[in-house]
Amino acid sequence: MLFRSSAPGSYQISILDNNDNVIQSGLTLSATINTISTSTTLSNEDITLYTWPVTVSGGTSGSPVVVTFGDDITFNSTDQYFIIDSEYVTIDGSNNTLTIDGVTNYPGLVQNGTSTANGYSNVIVQNINMTTLNGSTISGFTGWICKSYFGRNASTNSYINNCST
Image (cartoon, rainbow, N blue to C red; front, top):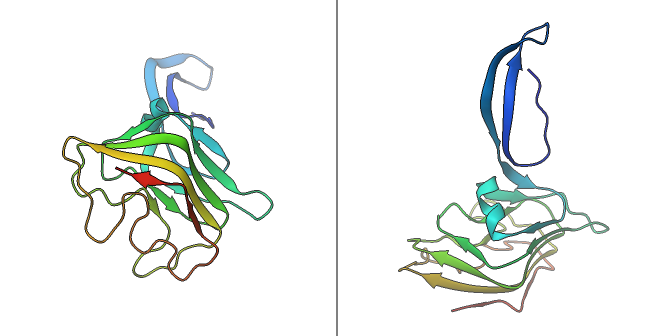
């Protein structure tokens, strides 16, 4: 059986023998995404299509990868954040609100570097309004939007027009 799809979601599939006779039908295949390597607009209904955390990579100076929030988004897990894995990446909230709902020790929205790994340069995080509900708390030594060590030993990173309440 060969299955190819570039789109996440659920697919109804059947298994065929070498003569194209149906052996099993009515099966559901669920496809999720854990990497973004082209510019993408996320909506709140898209969140379940991804396996979190999501790695964002593939940006170049001539073609940055931009992740744009298409509407207000709600996260309800400590795993829901972005890992930057190349230069020239933009996370743009488009002035939409990201709500962290019922999450204890949320680690921050964007990881760009760790205590043992340098961050990437030319990363922009902009236009994100962040709020919390239902007792959400932040992990120690981090920010709601940028995780600890954001931009470690990197240059030309920007944090523009973001707020958390």
